[in-house]
Image (tube, rainbow, N blue to C red; front, side, top):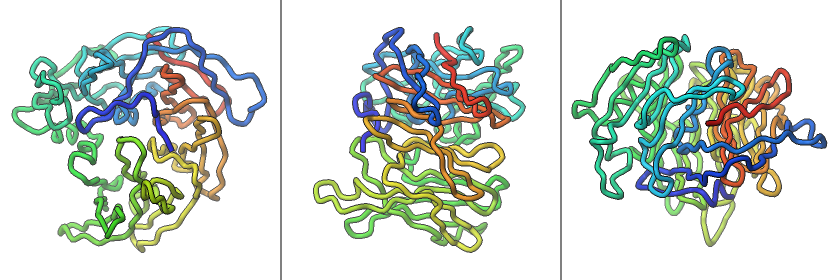
Length: 377
């Protein structure tokens, strides 16, 4: 299995996607249930993203009428975590403009979609020596509120010697990537249950153990899966998607023996875990399920969208209907797809598409069975 094999670049503990700036190269994508029809043609845009930021980038707002996204503005050969600008475009990509200067690490749209919280590094104060560009080396950060109607900015918090993880907590997305702390902590929507995921060795095999943590801090293991050892150096951690306050979805991996690279090949399964009973049920299994990127649950919780490897370097977006565990392919492209994000009404998906090292942001209209290239600059 390979994921973006030619354009992954390792810098410290961070993984970046690099881009060669070429305009008007055709990208061919198609709605999956019309595979014999002529594919619509799109054109490449000079947009690039880090792997971690794809989960929150791009993002549909105002009921799908506009798109927020990040533009890479640094040196592709020496990318830094803060080399991004937050931008806004209308849905059809007819107008796009920058909302912030360079320095954006991450952002989160507020529930009313009228404002955005933006976590920014202060580039001038960062270490300038090569190698000092990982998350742990970011010492100076700020949290800003941006009003999307007036475009007024307000400083909410400065680092004041606080670690970057505190900025992420205030941002409300997550803590630092798991590689920084070697664990994932996730809480249910109403904060009733907390899950701790840690990597643990057991003889020659690496496992991920899922623990339910009670109010006193007591940990009870409720699930365990093998750790997929990727062929590239982007470290894999199992995804966590909360269905409700007492159950979640994650990925199970069961390896096949590979003498040259143990735990590199095997079967992936989408699993539902009941936190009350501790029962785990496989909803769907396939050797071609992609361990990257993360899964996406639609707003009403009825369907999970995930990706699979197709034939001839094709990426496929699939839908798992949670009512009856049936699956269907939604979209296919010769290239790579980033994480999917839903519009508030659940009728549209937006994601980044990578073909021949060119980047597009794509909107998939699930109601009209149509696809649009929506963002460029």
